[in-house]
Image (cartoon, rainbow, N blue to C red; front, side):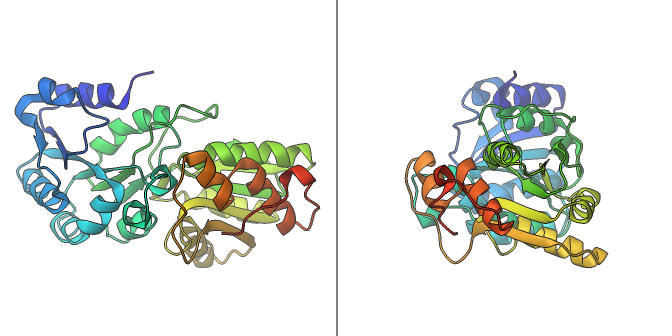
Length: 313
């Protein structure tokens, strides 16, 4: 499997308009300065400068791909993203590192838990949430080819599910069919949702598992179909409940006049407790076992002892 870095380099060498930029966040692109020369720009720890410069390059016909920590890219530089990039609908691509729980050892200042809400609120901005490194690589050509601005939640996790459908902007991927409950997930949490689906199926619950790799544009048809064909929808996200996937689902179904019981699993009125990622998932209730327990409770079914002790988020 090609790496993100190799894929981005290949695309940049094939298209001289592509410029790779960073705010001193080179973890995923360390080999590119030597290969791209003046088409690699590091502005230092200055995310506002990064986005402003990217907008200027886009106005000059370039396709800037900007890398920074997700929380600073979407929060510190928000006005620049909104005003310099969003108003002109410039093809600036924003790649946010360690979003959500992937910022596991960091405190609230470094936790991007409102990034999706902020980015999807900008007219024209597309939002991509790959479930693993393979999906990130697969979607990258489409992200760069789009004339719209884009925000990508960077994810280098190894593939944890067998993908069934090629990536298409705005199309969800259905990994399992079922009529009792639909699990809606994105990003690296898809792997934990898949584990929850496995545990639920073992207890006789028929599960539909949907990978929402594009949150904007959202696959409205997939959401409506799931709502009409399931007893319960479950939204799973390492994001605040307000403005993220749960809000997207609520907005979509209300506009279509569709109602269904819905269980949101997200963070609500607080940031998460820092720790190693497995400890974060355990404490916040996002392991496959704890997700399955939450669903069984919502379905008014008994949860076995090994799934008990779920923390409500």
